[in-house]
Length: 167
Image (cartoon, rainbow, N blue to C red; front, side, top):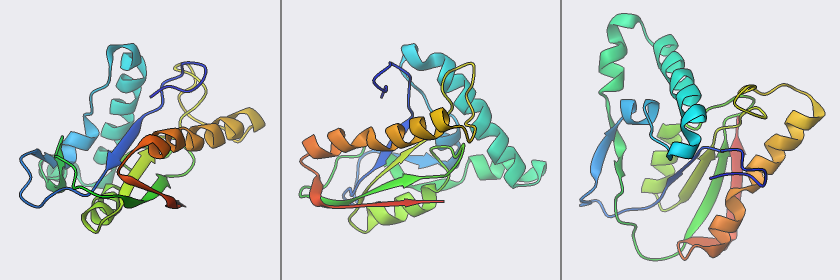
């Protein structure tokens, strides 16, 4: 998704799906190595590097392959359950990546919530990290607002049942 200036913003969405889903089970590595449209390739390369560094710093190097192959409780492109669901917008905090709390997002989705997480990024590809400047903080707030129209149009989201969470 892109902001009003065309700046790419990374968004992940988890949603309730049938337990007998036909989607492909994700691994932790699926979250680290996400794809993006060609127009967002520069940002995606930055995010992949950031995600890889986060994974590498979370376990001893000998355990990294096991972490990356760890099965997760999400299925890529799984069909959504029917109905409307409460919605949670999750933000990982200053420079938090989209995967900062995938376990919580998966848990909530498995219990009947739609969850959206946005990577809170800097102002451009040249400044991919946030600072605590007024313009960066304003950008963060605008980024947090981006999924709202998506949820308002969705037939899966309970419009009067939306909450926010973050680090």
